[in-house]
Amino acid sequence: MRPMLSPQTTTHCGTHRCGAGFHFFLVLVLLLALPLPRLIGQSSAETALPSSAAVPPRVIAADINQIIHPVTVEILKNALAEAEESGASALLIRLNTPGGLMEAMRECVEVIVSARIPVITYVTPSGARAASAGFFLLQAGDIAAMAPGTNTGAASPVLMGQEMDSVMRKKVEEDASASLRSVVSRRGRNAELAETTVLEAKAFTEEEAFKQNLINLIAASEASLFDQWEGREYTAWDGTKQTLRLRGAVVTPYALSLREKLMSAVSNPNIAFVLTVLGALGIYVEFTNPGLIFPGVGGAICVLLGLSALSILPINWMGVALLVLALVFFVLEASVSSHGILGAGGALAMALGAILLVDSPVPEMRIATSVAFAVSLSFAAITVFLLSLVIRAARNKVATGIETLPGRIATAMEPLNPAGRVRLDGDFWNAVSSAPVSKGEQVRVRKIDGLTLEVEPVVSQPSTLS
Image (cartoon, rainbow, N blue to C red):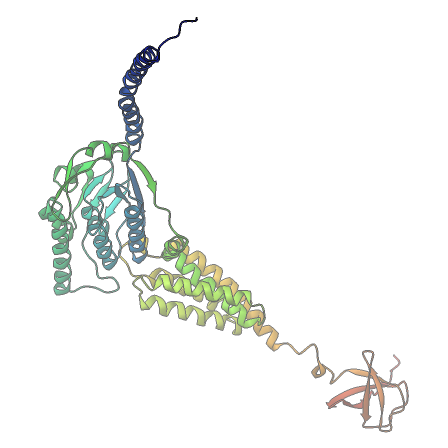
């Protein structure tokens, strides 16, 4: 007989071998698996760390490089809103302005001090200035900086359009200096010295302003500005100390909207004056040539744009009176034979009116003399030419229509005794003659009665022999 293995023996041996193999496999898996989470976590951390560290801070930059007026307030508000909504680390305001309107300046200061992110005011590039109202904006920033070769100050207020008496000047200066002191003191700068820019019209170079604590630093570039202030504290408007870290920041210029671009361009007094004059010329052409449409539409738009820009500027009524006098002279020149005297007087009155139109101590807010004379001479020449055409046309006899028929010569197509038909310029007319006329004879038209011509025979002059 074949020997047989007992079930006990078989079961015991199989269980022992399988258990040992399973335990070995389990231990191996645990040994391999235990470092895995640690390695994965370490790898993830090493991957994520450079990614977050590689993202540089972002700064939105807004340029104020012209006079300060209501459009400037709108640009600052929109630039700050974009910086705050996009999560930018700061708003950089580049200043290069001769000053501007006091009310617009106050609104700009309100925008800056109400910002929820740091605002850096920076006078740049070299050769730039933050004068008059620009000095207030410079001081309003959390951090005030200037580039080498720049200046600031001379913030004495001027009441545009009229002279200030001593009492009024004192009131305006005290109000402006108090407003400036409150801003400068809160920023931790030299409020007493800043006040002299208003009361004594003091101005400072960047070195003087830095040494006397009117600004925080001098920086040749934006990158240098960020590097110098890296890790330093500043006093926020609410009095808290905050640290700014902008080293390596990416500066993104604020993109003006179409409305802001248009209003910024139109707010230039020279452009506003040119638009107003062109608009007036277009409207005049439309009135003298009805049906052209385009000159009237374009002229109305130009006049409204020009007047809207001039409305925010201080207007001198003497300049307005001279412009009106110039228009009167142009009309008289076309209707009266003055040998050019009235036309020349109109051009001179218009140029002087343009120069005096905007009454401002800031040259950038006045109409340039070259622009005033160039526009005035061109407008004078065009206006006199057009007016002369209109008046000449009004004086000329009518060349078309039935009004031109009296005095014309017609030919009798049949005997007129007294009625019949005549031919005039290829047309046949019913006619009534004052005397009998034979067929083929010529007659002269005396007048028109409805569709009937009243004619008379043409008497031929007898020839004489020499």
